[in-house]
Image (tube, rainbow over all chains, first blue to last red; front, side, top):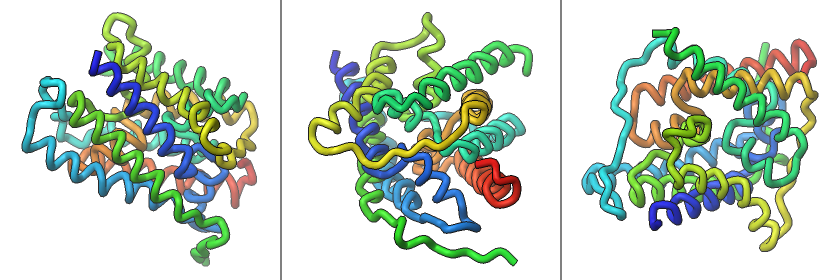
Length: 139
Length: 146
């Protein structure tokens, strides 16, 4: 029960963060990526601010090892930089640049009633399902 | 010759507050229940009905509901989507497939992974930032597509 409440609370806070930061405004996101045009550097503060807090959290997590609800804190264990990682990041970067929407803001835009989100998110789901289907075949 | 010009009129210092909140949400999830706040990962778990956990559904629900709750407190910030339908579909497919193939997006790699100083996340972040910048440059200034 507590786990679910924390999940909901984190989702709400994350959504507020995205809204306040400007990440949910695709024009602003593309302005941030438009380094060689009229460059809007605001969103550098988003990753910067997020990182500062998260670094502290990670330090605490590494000392504690167990969460508030008593479960083990799970950290990804993969360390190899391979083709899958880089090609995946490249495809994501191209898609992100094309429309200025990444997964979190896309989901938040469902709630603001932007019709575009109701096209983007189903397409994103299809992309994810294609990967799920292809994954066992990629080896 | 390409020159860099910062658009100070578009600059919004409040973005820092948003970023700090993203950090707080990430830490609550990490210390609270021991899980990484990777949005593409959590969202994709909803597509695996046998493996999905209730907190993951609630986290995504929180994201969807957040603007409604935000709107009760203050007017929603400016949101302008100017993209065409074919671009939305193409970009959605790329973002969905790419984030799964690359094990994360701006949250999981960009915030959580970089905070852990994970070499994979740093490589992924540099890569998606680079291709995002190249895409906007080509799409906006060369092809006039976006």
